[in-house]
Image (tube, rainbow over all chains, first blue to last red; front, side, top):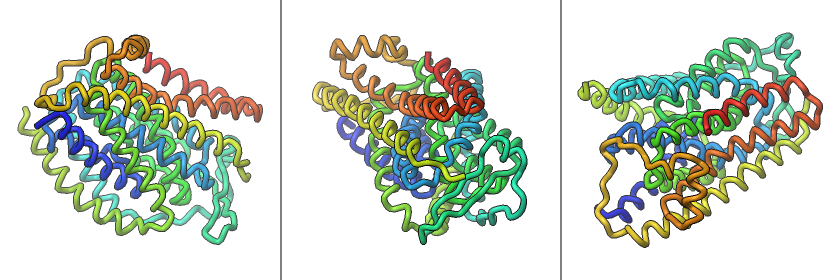
Amino acid sequence: MTSALFTLILFASSVGAGLLGSLTGLGGGIIITPVLVLGFGVDIRYAVGASLIAVIATSSGAAAAFVREGFTNVRIAMLLEVATVAGAITGALIATNTPPGVILLVFGIVLIYTAYSSIVAKTSKPHEGPMDPLAQRLKLSGSYPLKDGTLEAYSPRRIPLGFTLMYGAGVLSALIGIGSGVIKVLAMDRAMGLPFKVSTTTSNFMIGVTAAASAGVYLHRGQIDPVLAAPVALGALVGAFLGAKILPGAKVVTLRRIFAAVVVVVALQMIYKGVTSW
Amino acid sequence: MVKPPTIELAVGWVLRGGVWVACTFVVLGATAYLAMHGGEVFKPRHEFTGQPSTLTNPLSIVASALSGEPLAIMQLGVVALIATPVVRVLTSLVHFLVERDWFYCVVTLLVLSMLVWGLF
């Protein structure tokens, strides 16, 4: 096919990825890497590079809208970013020594886990009771607007656990070209007891930074091909903007169910590809 | 503690601005590229061969873009995109400085230095 046609299809796929990723708060990277590898036969290393760029685009596009709404907690994000960025750089550095087949395999497993947690996840109730002393010392509590406009206060707990999970999220993000939104949201929602909408928006906020950390390393390694990265990033951006507009009224549970179904199919294919490449 | 909205607004601003700048480069470069190569058969990167050094080093990318190479212009947009979260962290640093929140200044500097290290 011609460059022009390829670019167009790539762009369109990325719009879909960006939309879905932004609506579910899980990031478009998890869709784009498989699309590139399975759909277009791109080498995983280029796919990861392009996908990370799209992840940054998605994150920056959506975060801009959410931040205005007042859901994101900048301090929590910044603190946890120390962990994710460290993880991302670690991941990017070990990625060169990792055979592509392994990366594909890891991806497939992460996808299945994503699907599983998408369906099973019930939002935990925000923690009632005294504030975690560490949270207090680090000034991590905040409040967010409810639908009726009143402010609801919250405060995170189990911060060291959250930190560790974020490090892992960073490593994964670099390795397979995703934003690790799943892990981030889970860490904040379950481990740290933050309200769901705060978790998802703060996660979106952090995803871009995590991706930028490893993207920088990959740029140097020559893994970012502008011919791939450009349409993918633009498409994801368009999709993310659309998603941010729709989100306030969207039913996250239904979205996640659809997402989970698609993801399982893709995961199996990725695993298959990873295993057969050995 | 209710957060004042200013930092959030500034951050949103930075992100959107950066994204627009990046997109401009990408679209410009892509248009030029497609105009020149759009009809060619596309080889979908089945193998990893790495990118030429004009496309991997931020400084070389700028130089190459200035000389009008479409791929470099697109890559410049990509670099601008990568830079967006970095600038966002920078904005947060300024905010914490203004608020005299020294602990978070340090935290932010830590994140910033790691990011910059990776990029260069």
